[in-house]
Image: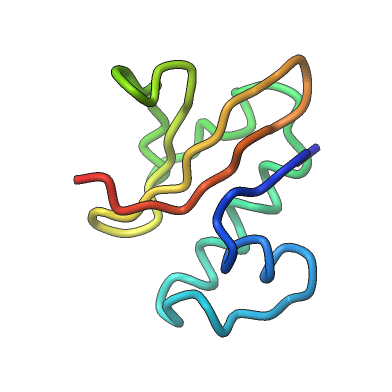
Length: 92
């Protein structure tokens, strides 16, 4: 279950279905990723071909990342069986 979302546009989309703050070409993939994150109780559900799931290091230590498109990622961390601090970033 997703506990909190950091990115304002992502939060609007998740809570209200408002896509106005997200790039239109990413909306369908973001929808799929958020659906999986909402159902996730562990990382196995996020191990999907094309998501390129990997653990982050450095200032993002403790977070996991999945690819939306090219440089764009959705990052998150698990606290118990909950998904926390979900963010949508261009970190490259």
